[in-house]
Image (cartoon, rainbow, N blue to C red; front, side):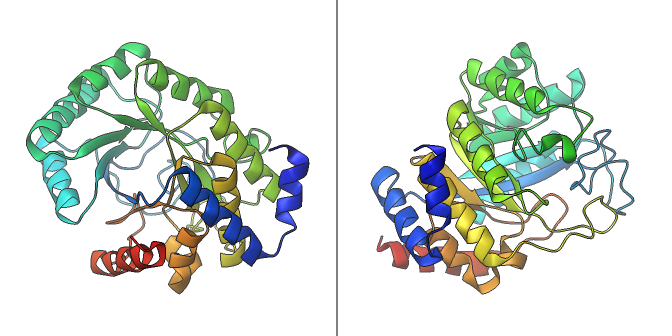
Length: 305
């Protein structure tokens, strides 16, 4: 689908766009609904200047900072993730890179969780080299998460301490190690709809496996605290366009779904989403798990599973 066709799609009434996206979901990926849960295993004091992030040392957000949690805490959180119905568990750390000692703790945790808990393992640990990716894969890691965040053209307006190319290189290194890749971004950071389309096209070119879509929740103290939240209809339009562009990839709604979509979260799944994060986020409390399970039941009914 070329840019002219995508521009034409953007002009469609939202109901027509949703219908096309729902058909694309049915045709290319069916009724697979993936639930993931994440753990903030190392919080705050990040040297990077991502304007949206509450964990940057440059932003006086007042979040709780703590060093890497131990293996036992990671295993305990993985058990909880499995208990609440998650199919995947993601260990997430703040910062650009981990030390060798920190990486070894996480590798040990991944091995134990894979072999004793029985939940699919993901990790989001910043930049890693080839040997580090292979260490994690050998431990049992199946998928690596590393967001592009936004389009290549808008990236420098959001982050200056590393480049869009750095993120591309990390994704390619994860794929080289034989890992699946989870990569998406945040919408509502002041970018245009064309920027969002550029992001979707970049993810398509990289052939990532899973695409988390976060909707900015402006956090007091960050550089984006004064931005007006994205409208629900604009978020739904973006999800629909991502489905049409990305066809058979997992598209999961994550942070911001509660505050922006509110009672219309099910509509995101009619617009092409087929996954979501449950059990909370990194620095933002999520919705009650029981409410999310009711949403899952509603989605299955809509999809007639």
